[in-house]
Image (cartoon, rainbow, N blue to C red; front, top):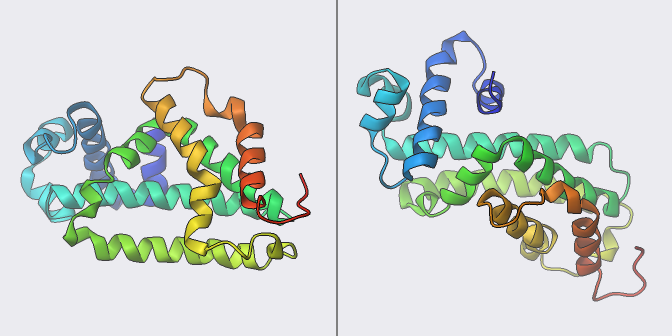
Length: 212
C-alpha cells in the first residue's frame, strides 16, 4: 500500500469507503500532475476507472474532491502532532514536538504536503470558507489548550495567539516548500535542531531570561 493510500485508509476506513479512497487517490495524482485548476472531473473519472455519477455521489463536484483531500491531510497531520505532544513535558518540548512532527509528516507524505500548499488558493472559495474556518478553529483550540496548560506558558503568553504558529512554523514551512519543489536537496529532517532552536528563540526574544 502506498503512503497516500495508507493516509486515506486512516481517514476513510473500512470496505465501504474503498471507492471513495480510490477516487481520492487518483484525484490527488491528477491534481499534482496537471494542476488543480486544469484537472477536470473527466480526468479523475478516467484515472479512477469509475463514473462521473460515482464521483458526484461522494463529493458533489471538483471543489468537493479538493476539500476532501485538503481536510484529510490536515486531519492526519494534526493527529501526528497530537500524538507527539503527548510525549512533551514542557512548553519548549512541545514546540519541538510540533516542528518535528510537521517535518516527519511532510517527508512521509510529500504528495499530500505538496497538495496542501497548492490547494491554498482553491480553499479560499466562499463555498469552502466556513468548513475551513471550523476545522482551523478546532485544531487551533486544541493546540492552545495544550500550550496554556504548560507550567512555563508564561514565557510566551505575551504573544498574540494568532501569531504563534507563524513564528513556530514559518521558517520550517518555507524550507519544506522549497524541498518539495526540488529547490533544495537536503531533507528538512536534517535541520530539525536548527529549526526548533530558531523557533524557540524567536518566541522568547522579547523576554528575559529564556532557556535554550
